[in-house]
Length: 615
Image 1: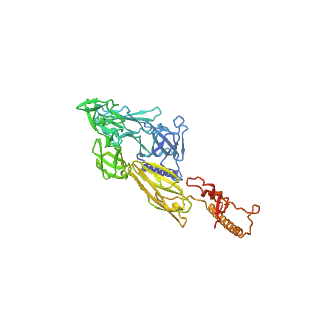
Image 2: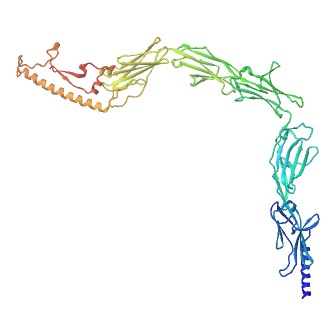
Image 3: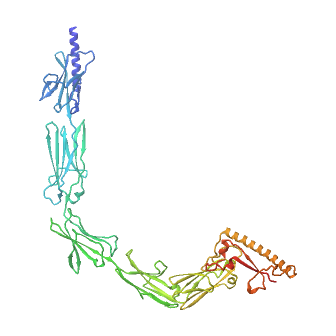
């Protein structure tokens, strides 16, 4: 039995040695973050029924194996073993070392494996600090661009530099990179890198950044900083003088700014001058900026901007031409007002001065029809319609908005002209109509009427208008109405004929019109009823009077003083018998009986009717 047990132990040992040799070599690597728990497996195993005496764990300290599970080691209270796995809690940076697993069967070591434990700490993101003092392109020494710092990493990371996303390499003449590595008291590393490089004018827009590189869990990791630009100082090579105005063609009265601009950084000091007769006059500008609030034609000319580069002591000049467009001295000959007779001729001449060729436009009134585009406007065989204001608009060619105008009044003297369309006006008997007469002439005419009535006159700009309000009578229907317009050069008249209309249609519109006074329909119906009643009463009285007169002639009615019935009449005509009929008329009918001037007719016409009963 002892022999068989020894044989079994020898077989197990051979198996473990063979497995360990196959799994050995450089040994596996376990990575764990600082402060976490590390699990290191003992990469040996045996069949379930195999026997072994013990498994021991060692750590290598200065190439000397030391037992992990001892009372006086640094792992006390932090380690335990789960089956074949060594568990280390709260790992520290000092735990970065080699651990060895040893399997023994009796007094013989049957298997050993080694495992590398790597403890890491992810570094803080890189911080970049740019040189904010600025860098000159003329610097002889390689200037500092920026500093990149990353803290608290383990193991120590690496820093690289980029310009416009292109990797920068160490170059003693153009690029110099200096790095420092600091181990903190915690055992973590802080890495710092400073970039030195020459710059050019184009680098004013270059963007720099640093990148942090470290290895973690068997893979390369990178973190980039923010991208920064550096202030680059360079001398002025190009200089220009700019004329700033609301529009390309400068006009008098506009605000104009003269501004010197160079491509140097920082901008140099500028001097603004005006060149006149080959003489340079310095202007009171604010570092090369001059504002003219209301520019004048006298401000036209050549201006110069000058600067002195303090590094190279070179002088640069730039010039610009200011042309101020103007329009002045516009006048019309003859100046006016111009007085003409009908049939005369007239030539109006327009003159002005401008910075460029002038364009002319003649109109009657400002917004009237275009009459001509030359400097002179000729009028021939003038009539009263030729009277009015003539406008000459002058514009500077090629300068939008630069235009002025002037007017002259022309008056044509002559006899009045009556404007009328209708000479026949439909009316109704006894209605009130308003007739209108218009006339124009210079001097201003006076309008009169051939009949009396209420007259209203108006005048405006040598035009006269007269309204006549009159009642339509039989005589007016026969004679008609004539209006006459008169001034010192003669007179003109227009006859208006009135005609009864059969249908109550409104009169046609025109310059000479009849305007009936409108009545309410109800008022017209009341008037008709009253008229019918009056006619019936008159007929009854006439019949009664005839009967009485017949009886009187036959002697049937006594004529004595005591019994005679006397139907009276006015004293002057006692041989005539008159019957007086009184009628209480409605207000509407009374209104129709008013006179042409709005006054009431005589009482006899309104309230009394006399009927002559003579044979």
